[in-house]
Length: 537
Image (cartoon, rainbow, N blue to C red; front, side, top):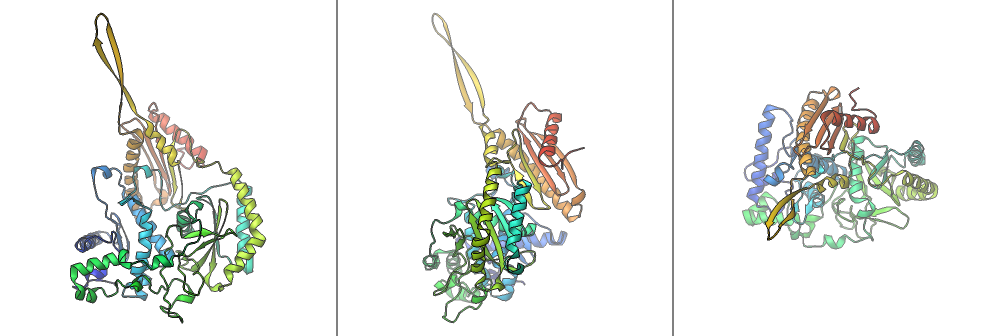
């Protein structure tokens, strides 16, 4: 699937570029540089990842980050790559494989429309004003691509599993395929594979939490009628027109136009009733925008509704649907939210239009009381937002096998930034007949302990990422063990222990700790909170 290899068709290579108003020569320069790097590295190591891109056969996503003195220590290749991986996984969840889209629509119009519907909403979460916020050292004690799992008491966990089995048992097990239960933004239970759980969990925490919901249903039809020239596709078309001229533009890039229909194209992944480009009424299906802000709202019966997948004149809203990565099965979403408890249910698309209403009716009749009881139990057991705080420790635990992580709350990590140095300057002033002594306290801005220790941790994680990549390629992950102890300039300790697919990163800020005391502290942390997985015994 080689695109844009013929002279005069180079622009076919670009399916999406952000920012859309970037000059075309710069866009083509980035594409050319990326192709050169990929060609060079492919000749050395087949299918090896390079900085800031994720390769899927001939489909490549590239992230370019400006290097400066302010960002040099904050940048970590693994964190940048994780942003691209999250984007890829979410895109496949909503639209299916990009390769499949290009195979079914070789011109690339559908793929471009899906990318332009997806990426601006995804990237908006990283924008602070007009500036793109890259992962910084403050996120050194977090790990993307994982879920945060709450393990309640055995009785509560059994009740959650019982609820899942009840939902899956209706209609002979054909009504509900999978169930995921969240409490706030923490995973309680899931019947999905770890990979699918991680992606759906990410989407739920981004757009389905109570703080992210719209207070009232809104119409997207008005936004669809906005001037398309103000959108990404319009900006790209405008740049093409200025650079190439109208006649050459039509020959090279005929699928990008500034007509209102450019934002409304047939999508094979919307629903069975809307697969064709034009239905009986002559209406074309709109491209879903699952990541649009406030695209979900909660109805009076506690079910979440959305119009982010589009709707058509004279028809009801299209059902939200996703594609599972492991089975490649496409399923409809049904979400029920009671207070802080969110149930995400996946039901087969083949069940017909009555399946979701039937499921909602049975849930309200047979399971609502059970859900309320489960929520009340979890609330009693939940320690609060600082549930994973351990006094004296700043830590990150990562289980790459099950894609589960646990880390210190951001508010507790930030408390280290209060460390300042106070110096006293004595100034003597001689007066007659006595001597007066004045004392001035000067607060000097410093590279605080939290910044210095997290910057050190960031550099260490960079090395661990490289070592992990080597181990994965040599299939030696299960036997890999590593322990690393670093004392920072501010006398904090950064200690790393890895064993198989488990990783524990610890920052200890007690300046009086010796190496022996620091290692003993990590040993206690491992035995008390992580079942001794990192103990040296």
